[in-house]
Structures are given as structure tokens and as C-alpha cells.
Image (cartoon, rainbow, N blue to C red; front, side, top):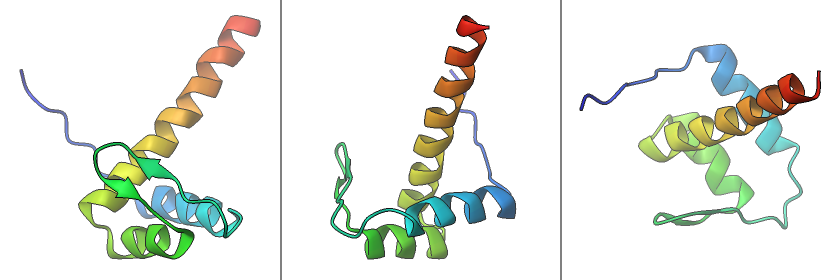
Length: 75
């Protein structure tokens, strides 16, 4: 089985960074198997484009896709 590698463009990174910046500072999302992250750590991972940053972007885009699928079911 091959693994599909998805690289994100600058627009995607910027979009997710903006969403995290808008997040209340008291929230600490947990990424299963990786740990809990405060807002500053999330922004650092995004800015440095680490593996965790890439995972964060993937999670957000999966979340966005779920809305698209739900909208298609409603329409």
C-alpha cells in the first residue's frame, strides 16, 4: 500500500495559522498519541512547518471536508 504525501501551499498554511490565532488562549487541543498543545505551541509548529504542523493542517482540512460532505447531503 502506498502512502499519499500531501504538501500544502502557502495559502493553506496561512489559513490554518489564522484559525489558530483566532482560537481562545485557554484551549489546549490534544492530538492523539502526540500530546496536548497550547495556542503558542500550535503556532510554532505551523510556523516551523514541522511534522506536527503538517498533521495540524491535515486535521483542519479533514474537518473542512466533513462540512462539505454534510452540505452535499442536505442539498
